[in-house]
Image (cartoon, rainbow, N blue to C red):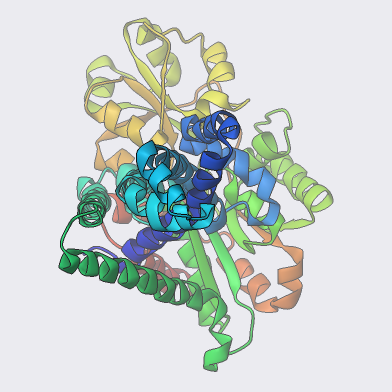
Length: 508
């Protein structure tokens, strides 16, 4: 069953961004027809924004926007910039395409420049301008799926979930409505464009105007509804108690952990807001910006990727270094470990492990020159990742490793496209796909103990948060976490239900 709220989020992202682009782009296009010398530089600048890959643009916006660098704001700005070029260009082209003789006749009748624009140029260029809106809308529907990577929601959330869970049904639940939305927008705006061509029947013109008016009213109403849950709750008589914002990264284990923390807080009567599905280091940035209050991180990631320390294999030393570093550098509190270590897992197919007698990474290193490897971007770029790992084991593959999204590496391994990947030790897909984890016999990887990270101000405001984190500390083993992940990734169960069942067992 498709989550309708995700469709609403997707529609609103597109509608608000394209609406804003139209409000800005059409006047800019008109101005360019009056200042032709400006058209080249302005259109070139708009074209630059179109050529920047969407993920790269989000990456640029996050530091520029500071505390507003994650969520809907960067997504709306990016979609606005992508929609701007076709609207500006088509407005300029449409008005410039009006025949000179028609302009001369209007001026000869005594029309001012404003009257010429309003009564002659805009009506004649309207179909071309709407065609620009049509292109901008279709582009935005597709690009908005990427916005889920920065926590903006929308149908991309389902696509990313499906990729990491190896679930084609989830992918289709996100992709098909997005495709249908793009086709519907294209058809409606195409009809509207044809309806406003000079010479068509008045009935069709009135119908087109009615559709346009209904669209404007619907957009305004939907914007109010969209914003209401975040701004209007207190006006409806709800408690003024500020919720604790629980964050999570964009893979199943993190969503389960986020649910465990959130539900444990709710059992204490604490209001909670869930902000899940953040890619990269956005949870950390959200903590620093005050958009997230607590999430679960891994000590090795904190030590190497955030604090930029040299990798260490001593779990206690890493934890102490992380706790002190996060406190002194960021003013954040690192809680007690949850009880398990989610280190990198070097994975091969079960059949290969059995037929070739592979138990350790050193075993695999002997036959690696005949293999292809595929690794996630994180593993390829981290100081404790591929460069040091391949050197420690003397790994040489038949070609440079493929670098891809982590969730896709599992699919590539299972389908025989690659022969070795680096996953996570507690991933449910290991069991789901019949993979085997090789022993890190040279003890290369640092510890990745799961620990809660919290804003100190929130711990002071909500003492129940500290009690909850203390209650769940030490309750999760690696085997238990893998079972929870398998329940979501393998059995396709809801992370909310899986977390609830764990809490009943762990805290009774």
